[in-house]
Image 1: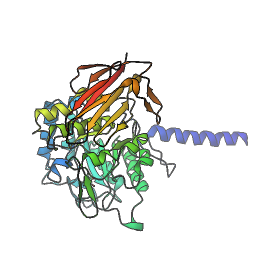
Image 2: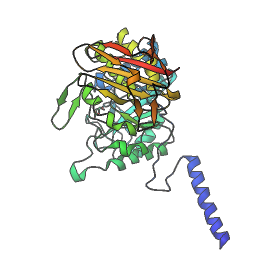
Image 3: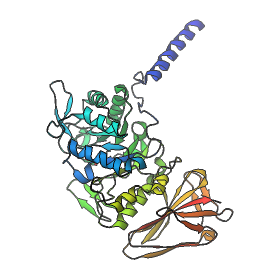
Image 4: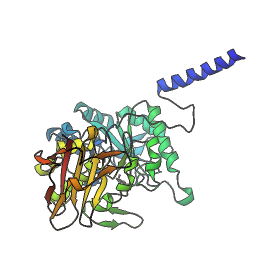
Length: 418
Ligand code: GAL
C-alpha cells in the first residue's frame, strides 16, 4: 500500500514537473497561466491609438519604428511598437484572423520581422468580445487560434479590450475572459505581455495580475489638462481627472502587474508645461510609458521630455513602487516615490494657472510610506537633491527647498542619502 501511494505520488509529481517544464498547466482548470518575468518594470513603447485612431497602415508603423530608432527613443527604453484597433481584416474560411490586406499588404509576419530587426518588439490589439470597439473581428471563441496566429507573426504584446462582451447578466465574466486569453498565450508557446483593458470597470487591480502584466485603471485618456468628455455610455478624461483616480490604487501595482492609467498624451497636449507634468506624473506613478503621439513629426522639445533619462530611471526603478500623494493643497501637490537603496523621488505638481512657490522644510516634515514600510528620516539622515529635469545639483535636505513651479508644470527631484 505504501509503495502504491509512493508511486501515485511520484506519477503525480512527474506530471506536474513536466507540465511546468513544458509551460502548460492545463491539468488544473482554474489555474492562472500567466508567464511571469515579462514586465519586471513598467512596459515602455508606442501605441497607435491616441494620435491615429483607426487610420493606420504598415508604412506608418515602419516610419514610426524608424523614428523611434533615429530619435534615440528606442535606446531610452521605448521598445514596444503596439498596433491598436483597426489592423484587422476578415477571418479566413478556417477562422484564422488576417490583417487588412489593403493597409497591411506585406502581412503581419513581415511587419514583426521589420520591428525585430530594429531591436523593437511587436504589439497587437484584440478584444474579448465578438467585435473590437471599432467593429473589427473580436477574439471571443477564437482565443487559442488567435494567440497561435499572433505567435506565428512574432507578436510580443497583446492589448486586450472589452467592447462587445454582452450586456447586464449576459455579459462575459471578465476574469474568465482574461484567464482564457492568458491560457491561450501560454498554449501558443510564445511569451507575450498581456495588457488588460477593461477600463477599471471590474476592479481589475484585485484580480488581473493573475492573468496579465498591466491593467487599465480608468476609461480612455484624452489630450486635455482637466476635462471630461462624454460620449453617451462612456466618457474620456484628461490628465488631472485620471491622475486623481490613481493614488488609492498604488498598493496594487508592482513587478509584472502594473496599474495602467492609459497611454500617454505627451506631445498631444497644447503646452510644454502640461506635457512635462503629464510625463513626470506617469513616471512617478510607475505607469507604463506608452507614447501616444506622432513620433516621426515629434518636436525636439517633446523628444527631450520623453527621453529624459533621470525621469525614466525614476519610472523604471526596480523597487517598482508607484508614488503616493504626500502633501496636497487645492492648487498644488507633492508626490513621493520610494526608490531602491533608500532613495526617493519627489514631484511638485502645480495643478493651476498661477505660478506657485512650493517649499519643503525637511526638518519639519515626515515622509512615511505606511503601505510598503518605507520612510525617510530627515532628522537623522540628510539627502542630496538632484533636479531630475536638468540633472543639476539642487542642494540637500539640511536646507529647506523652495521651488518656483510655473502654471501646470511639475518640478521633480531625486533624493539620495548622504
Ligand atoms: C478603447 C480603448 C482604447 C482603444 C480603443 C480602440 O476601448 O480603451 O485605448 O484601444 O478602444 O477602439
